[in-house]
Amino acid sequence: MTETKTFYVNLMTCGIDSTLGYLYLKSKNSDVKQYHNLYVNTGSRYTTSELKKVIRIFEVFGSNYPEDEFLITHKILYEKFVQSILEFEDAYYTNRNLLLILIVSGIFYRTDQKAKIRINLFNNKDDRIDDGNIDYYKRIVDAGIVKNLESIDLPLKDMSKVELGKWFIDEYNNETMFPTKSDKIDFLVNGTWSCYSNENEECLSCKACFRKSVVLANVCNYIRPHRDKEMIQKYLDDKNMHPERKAAIELYAKFSQLGDKVNEHA
Ligand SMILES: [Zn+2]
Image (cartoon, rainbow, N blue to C red):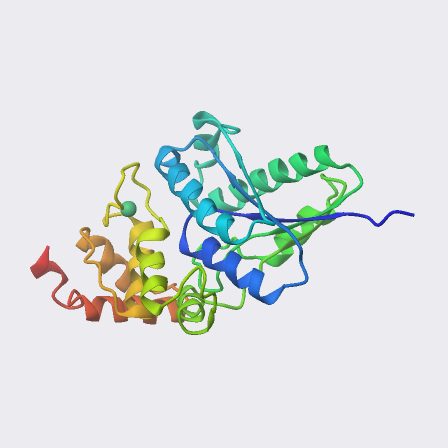
């Protein structure tokens, strides 16, 4: 009897969570021979820019991990479809993830109908959006929509964004890829990409840019001033935030001297 194949699939973007999350997985699961890293182009307004950065990151990883295979699917979901699931913001990420999981599972099921499929999502424990609910993903698997989908795992579910960043700077060891600490910092700042604009430079005004700036300030004292001062204040006033994220944001605000004086700088 031949051994059943398993596809290990990482649902990726080019942000800090999934790029560092991938390196984290690789370092902790050296027994896994091959991860399939998939970025699904949803056709949203910022994917033109995001796609370029994803390709660049996949090249960086690819040159060091020739055993990995990087697949990029183009234009599977179109703008109108994506907009329709944006209607209720709280449900957006869970709905989007479900769609991505179905697409990705379908791709691998088509490739080999006997193989098992295990998908990794890179949610942090301090993500505000409630899409880090492992029971939700278990229910998707149990529903049997994709026959061979064996698991949807959240390997970063016990780590905050800052903890992940600190792990990368302090503990991750790959001298070929990052010979020095400043190479790692450079990768965090310039190699990863998190922005809702569709420009060549990160806008430093959107929520995604802000979340990345908070990590940079906490992990390597790298300060990027945020252009939308009101947004920072909204974050500082938010009572429902995970305490670790709250602390990280307060430290960012302190470092960038935006805390109490936020409006003076506006
Ligand atoms: Zn931005």
